[in-house]
Amino acid sequence: MPSYDFKCVSCGHRFELFTTISQRDKAVCPKCGGPVARVYEGKWSMGVKPVTGGCACGGNCAGCAGCGK
Ligand SMILES: [Zn+2]
Image (cartoon, rainbow, N blue to C red; front, side, top):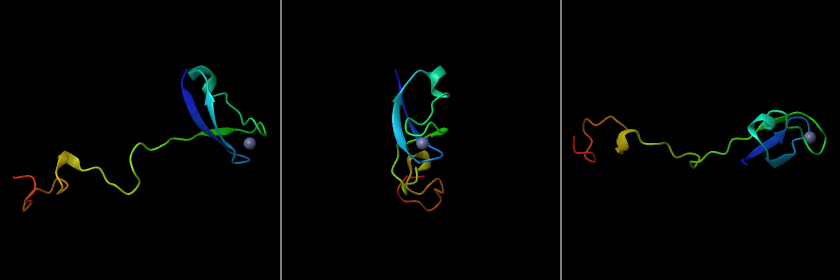
């Protein structure tokens, strides 16, 4: 059973819930019974931009010594 992170919209309580996909959207806050929103955890570090094409020049390869183009 997958787990999901939620945050209560009314009281701000954050919790993790193991539930089915069909029950997921019916989740309510265990503290106050208020509506909750899903919390999406980023899998990448904040502030680090993904490099397109694997080249350090970011795709602008004219004059880039790193990618050899
Ligand atoms: Zn709440």
